[in-house]
Length: 346
Image (tube, rainbow, N blue to C red; front, side, top):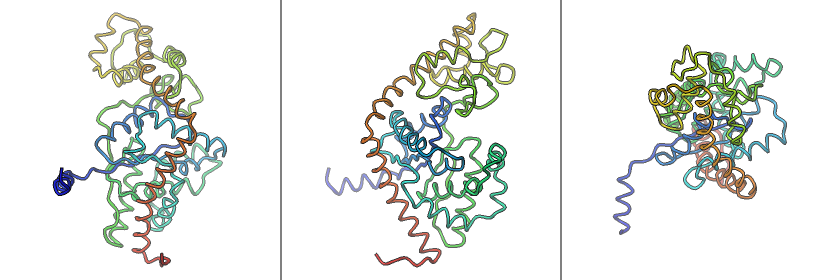
């Protein structure tokens, strides 16, 4: 192909939208995190320009043991690679490795109204959970999140039910800045995955699955081995009816297991009901457990291999930070010029 034809082909291709998403290194992701976020991250790489961030700065709103935080940051990075994040076609980086995030966060904080931050429900919820550590970072958390998104001009941000308010304030901050200083930031939209159930606790199926739950049988971790996965599903709460039937209101335990099974098999609720008609919960729980184990075992194996190569993981993160910084530094320089900060000669 000639250079002219090659340029014409590149011009004909529409620019891919950019997605940014992050996850905190506060522990090993659960099955719920995998279904709701991590699994989709790998799928999004085909159609979008993706930046994936290990959000270590966000985790500081709760006191962390320093050595454990460093260890978990590397472990989570290795797990994301094992789950299919391609460090060549996507940018995988650690938030604190790109200082421009915090530089932009200060500017945005000066363009965010106090009243907006006081209305954030997550601040109220976390303050109630940690009354001994209601810190300023917890209060300004949404501003740093806005900086994470706006610094890359992200078009889309995968959001769950508990993060829609953060996206709304990000758009508000961006719009306010654009109105004051001229077009600067892209107003991001939320991205809702096409498929994937909301995974609930195995012990209390009316609650979301959480790795912070004191009952270890309530959640499945992405790194759990097959025997552990089977054991946890065998102990999953169901009901006394004995029939596999989807009814989220009256049969939350069984319905949660059906949603998990459907997620990994692609079967509809009707097909699952037919498959287990006349069978007991024991057979059903084992089938769900085996299906989940089959999906997670290759990831766990690859995770162990990648984590053992510390130099590789650190090299990926160094390269990712450099690529992210090239974008982020340009945006901060642009913002600094617009607000009137005198910059040194280069």
